[in-house]
Amino acid sequence: MNASLPTLRLSYAQKLSLVAAVPLILAVAAIAVLVAVQSRALAEREIQTLEAQLIEAKKRELRNYVTQARNGFYFIYGSAAPNDQAAKDQVSQILSAMIYGDEGFFFVYDYDGTALVNPRQTDMINRDLTGLKDSRGTPVVSSLIEIARQGDGYLTHLWPKPSTGQEAEMITYVTSFPSWRWAVGTGVFIDDVLTSVAEARADVERRVQRTFYYISAITLAALLLVFASGMALNFRERRLADAKLKRLTQRVFDAQEEERGRVARELHDGISQILVGVRYALDSARRRVDKGAGDAATPLNQGIEHLGTAISEVRRISRDLRPGALDDLGLGPALKTLVGDFASRTGTEIEFNTVVFRNRLDPDAKIALYRIAQEALTNIERHAGATKVSVDLRGHKRGATLRISDDGVGIDRAQSRRAAGIGLRNMQERVEQLDGQLRILSSPNGGPGTVIEATVPLTHLLPPEENIPPTQEHARA
Image (cartoon, rainbow, N blue to C red):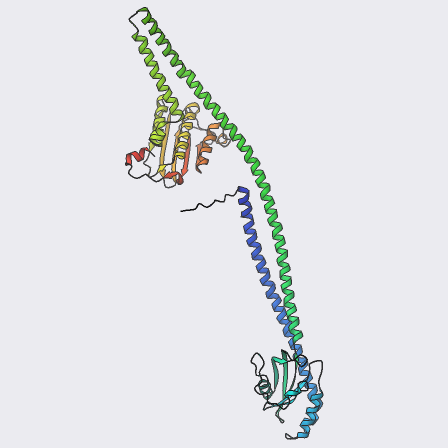
């Protein structure tokens, strides 16, 4: 079982607001993303520069510490032999006493990996620390000894802080005492650098968030402005629509009254007069019968003739109101009958052409095109003074087109744009109801000839019914 889904129908103002709001939201979102990406990229470059500068300052500081320490005992190392244990002990004592700050100290490892000096972590002294690794897997002591063998250098690693025992990021500078096979150096923890970098990144995120808030506030204000404009436009459109509806209703009433007046005139001037003649003929026949006169057939024949004329007149009026051929046979035959009546009534030369429709017109399109043809022929009869009229009806790949042309006095285009007369407005509105197009063509100065062309779209052409003979399908077009 298929469940029918509700269809969302938007008003003109709502559609306009949506059209204005969606690109605005997309544009603002794109701008916000671009601003965030660019801001983060720029800030990250600045933070990396700051981090590099801070670390470089730490490295220079470490190098200065080691240089000062070396200068303090270089007179001992420079005059000592490689196996001078007393000199080694004296230098070790000097280095053990050189502690600075809360965490700073000097260390000494021999090339075999044994810790000789470590004043803040004395439990490591005289231990082989060759295989010591930090939590990231960096072989700290082996790497420091390798750097010392090559001369000097820096190593970034994790190392337990003496104050807390917890691992923290550390930069170490190490140099070599080659004759003693010592690796001497010092390190500094860079918690403060990492904290500053983290705070800088957090500050960037806060600024980006504030930018998002500002952009969101501006977007919300813009959307409210669009919504308010849409509401104002909707209110204005509703007022205009109400006024237009009132005018249209009045015109419908006027058209109804005009049609009623026309039917009343037709009945009074045509059928009523004919029926009066029938009554007089029947009264005359009755008087003759009452008097015994034998010549009652003449008035009776006249009455019958008048009655036939009245029947024909009733049929004509009924056909004008709603032609039966339109429902029974289709638009083609109905137009052919209309054209024939026009030619008989006015004596105007008229040509009617149609082609076989591959599809059939739906009822709304048939009625609209028939009324347009009826209105056009009425205008030609009343105003054009034409001697030749052409009516052409054909289907094509875009829909169906009714074209009516004459060689009359024509219609001035300015007058056409002003929609002179209710007839032209009715034609236009009938076509607009079908999403079609009406064109009224004439010479610029109101010269001879007028062309009225009404086109209905392909949506009003229905597929042919099965088992319908081609001739009948043509008739029902």
